[in-house]
Length: 163
Image: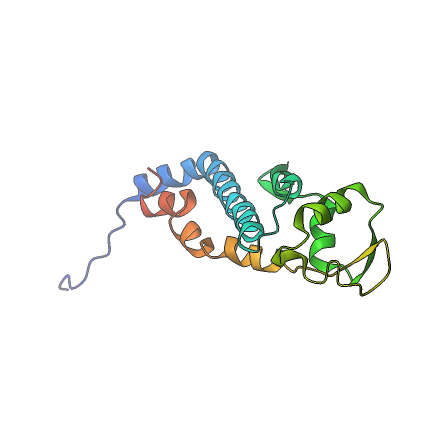
């Protein structure tokens, strides 16, 4: 018989070392990546508010936060007014609300207050309509998602072989 072909297993120690490091490194790195992705979404939402000129008293803007809600789990929180602004039905709102009254007083005559003082509608009320911003903000946050995952801690860990 002639020896024609050899098969040799090599790198087994390195592979075992890499796999043993996964138990410790993978959960930590996955949590770091998840936190960075949540930061991207938070930034996207805040930037969309700015882009649509929906920041008035900064209360909604400052309320958008990332919160750790579990093991390797993060949530984006905001005041419920953010959802109302995005999805409300058009309606007449009473100017008895001090915040709304203050907004009207500050914006009367500006391009943001179309229809104010035009005599239409009901006296003591202002017609308000939704300003969809959440989905666009989420799209802004999603822009870097592929890059974040391809170059994140978990991806680098696998590219470097656990080093």
